Amino acid sequence: AAGQVYEWTATPAGGKPGRFIVKGGSWDDSGCGICRPAARHGRPADLKHILIGFRLVAE
View 1 (tube, rainbow, N blue to C red):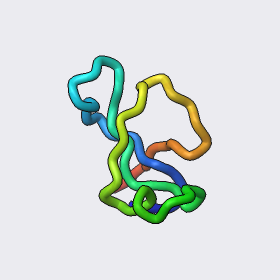
View 2 (tube, rainbow, N blue to C red):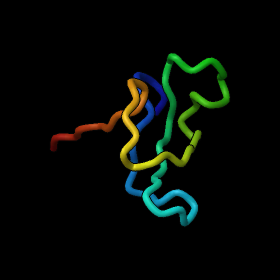
View 3 (cartoon, one colour):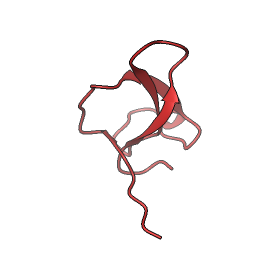
View 4 (cartoon, rainbow, N blue to C red):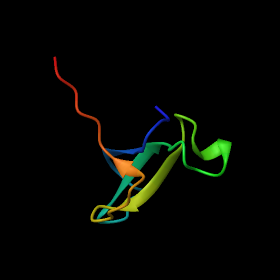
């Protein structure tokens, strides 16, 4: 879901080694189209950025 950061997934990005999908978007993005929940981008697995994170879930 769009909000604080893009969310890392375990989904490989288009067959490119070492790249994975980040989804959602950040409130800090400049365009509305890229901050919607359906937005998807391939990024290198070792990328560090203030707008990319992960979600913790406790059951």
